[in-house]
Length: 125
Image (cartoon, rainbow, N blue to C red; front, side, top):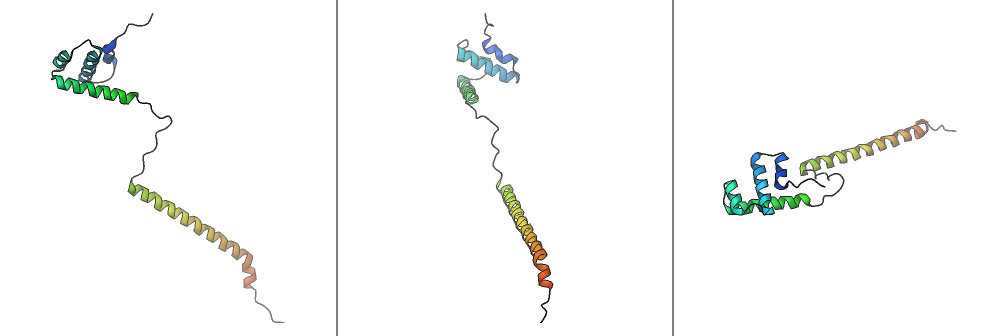
């Protein structure tokens, strides 16, 4: 045998303001048919149109919360344009530094290989 259904009273055990809980509990009661729209309007001290608007908002939020979600981590939001420009500039400078380092390595290697040869003077025979 299962637990007895608590229905709209489930709201009482959740976090939130008393006013928000009253609204949600009252909307659930109108949905389940235990409270009329007029009774809900009286309990919430508002008019019928507002009760209908509240109920629709609650149902839309419930449907949105029930939508399937993608698995895995959330994608990172794109960088603002100025931050992206800074990243692009930093990447360009890093590439330039790599090219300069490679050129210096080549110069050093050439100096080690060709340096002694270039420094010798040809003697006349």
